[in-house]
Length: 317
Image (cartoon, rainbow, N blue to C red; front, side, top):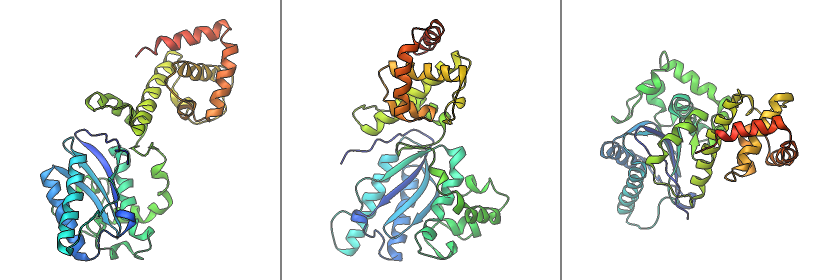
């Protein structure tokens, strides 16, 4: 199994998910769930984690947390190995408990923390485990929504500070059913959840990360970040904003010519695939191919050549 790429830095927020091997249960009893929460509490102190929300299902768990050091991989590996060892010792058995490595999505905190807490807390309802969320004990929802006593390490202030009280948070979670799918609209390559500004932030911290272009996920993410950065520079020199283009709406006149010049210039860098370029402008990879073919002829026009020169002057990296 290929090792997943982890984007790690101080103050990073993550949605963490881990499933049982072959989707088997990782919690067989309430005793197991208490053991896991105890282990997670130890990890929060040992690795300086801030845990904002959790839910324990039968064969997987969800966490919403923040790392105060660049140590997500070490922390979650310790949680998984320690819980598995303790559980196996108690049950007098051996073997793998979890299905490979945990999944972690780096989250833009300001825009998505509240939505993800709702998504995590609604898991038992979506799975048909309970008819009322309050009936699922192994979740941070009762702490947030009703003030029930929770683990000492659970941090509630960050989320609850956005609400007038617990009743308002309950209403938010209850109404969230209509928004559940929307939270993932800005999920990028299964690794990042956030807007364009968040991508720029990741680009700014990448020099502190250990980069390996052979890792497929990393290659895709860094390519999309680089492409957007270049596109913004090129659009700016033409007096445009990328917000004009990434909605996929039909363009005419000068706006279309500028868009096509940007597409052609990005393609000319030889660094990005058509689908990567198209994703920036809300168009398909085949539409990118048509634009490139058309621009090869249009490039003989003096005004178009001038635009291309201006754009390419901004493409020096």
